[in-house]
Length: 286
Length: 312
Image (cartoon, rainbow over the protein chains, first blue to last red):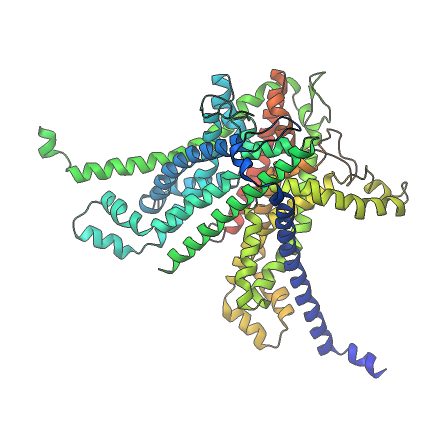
């Protein structure tokens, strides 16, 4: 009886509820961390064994033949590189306009808002868009269309980071530039951009991390190509589309190659994310 | 020559040129979104005109008979995304509260990094993991036991009906929940951090337990923006493509139970677009894309309005 009264004591009950709550929040966090570890473990367990030099020197094989992922890896690199050049040029200029010229303008608010929408828009719709403006009029899937689709996905990421990073620069820096008689555009290019360089690199890295694993926008723009090709007017293989094709196939060695590809992509994306975030943290402190 | 003397100086012209360059880059962004909408409307118009309002309520999807209705994929999209939110929200609140209130600061850095990395994993990797790891596990340890225990004619029997292969609406929603979890948790964490310290301290000063401070003071304080965070996650879940395509089973049947195969708008487009045979088929898929655009746009706009820019 004494024990019972103690349990229903108001103070003890509140304490008990609190411990239960803390436990639940810990459990929720554990779910996320365990999910991450399980996924990474599956990648390593299924992909690590298949990694070898042949992955980088041989093209994707027909079923039940030896082969690697060279055409897909090089195709991904080419399309990501071209896409990133476009995204970095447009993204940094657009981010600069928002941060340096857009102050107080209603149009800047609209652009900022639309950029945020574009940032979260489903990437498969970007694929449909590029299909309609490039693939259909030109009558054929091409690596060029794939690169443009990736550029559309990466540009809002670069724009957003650029604007955020430029806003961190103090106005004294701008005033100092103006005081020595430099024009506004010169101050931005020679002083503000230079001071923000680590942040701008971060934006590019995050953009790259975003597109290097993108599959949906490539499905009907660059389509895929089992042979090595560097031509921008022809279909081109990419690591994500090859993984998609191989993972859903009925052949065990294709599936094994898909796991290797998934491991390679995950390492690339996570490394770009970690380096980008570390750089961003560094530039926030200085 | 008179331009040289009376016109603006070289530096001023340079400034004007640079400003125009930056401005046109910003306009490219606007043009992209406008072009996206226009392309989907023009491309999807033939199908919308051909089928009329029936397109949205018919569950037929028959490329041979050229009869297309979007009800199956639309319902599949809404159900998977909705279920994913139901699973992700309590977890995200738990993670955010743990990181802000209870986690030792030494650990907080690594835990929040792990959560952020979860957001960095590409969709296609989630898809493979879902197909080869989660689905078989789910079939063996959840679907089969339920199959034997539940009376097939009862309400639960109908809810859990389906071939026990793990590829169904429920597992797709589980994958989506893991994928959107980091986005919601990160925003919620920043919102919780923005609660003024004196408000929390006042509550603690009155003798509230941490649970009471969180549930009665902090969560109500951020409620409005928190709904925005959920809608941000919803927007992502609605448009997620590859992971869902791998695991949802890709059936055009109208989904009748939790464990039935289904399809979403994005998975249907991913599966069929490159191989669409007729103009009407392509147009029907573009019209589906338009529907997806409208739904996600609404969710994202709602999210931005509720959260505001700074905390998103």
